[in-house]
Length: 189
Image (cartoon, rainbow, N blue to C red):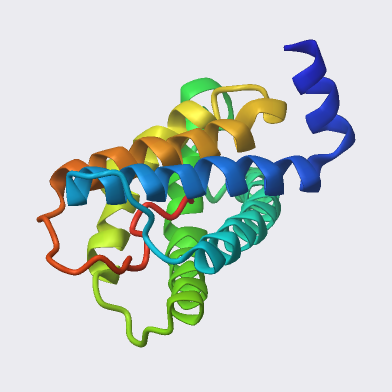
């Protein structure tokens, strides 16, 4: 664990990119495999490499987003725009999570959908409403736990949550007849 903490602290953007590239892509593969009921990839080999880079970019964006939203939450508290009890412990974690998933999450998911559309040669935002719903039932509770953790492990945990949501979405998505992938609803927020 010491190596991980040292690496994440010394390389905040690179570590965010690597963790999301690996875990976000793995979440998509697991979701697709569960959905298809057979081992498979939600795209060609080249598309999967592009998806890894898209997840890596998303990891960097999320690192910036988490840092910015913690500052935003602190500013709201400093200006007495949030109750004082939200300034520490569970109240802090919940407030950062709610604000992150309200002000940052929808745009980040839309951006991730655009990335997937470019990679897969698709158009439109089919399923984005379902993806946005995960902000309420999955990401707010998950990120409340995330923001209770030390800052050094928050991005790694967020990437792990992406994998968990991939499994959940794979189990709850109807089986598709076609073998091509669709944009991922498990976008991390």
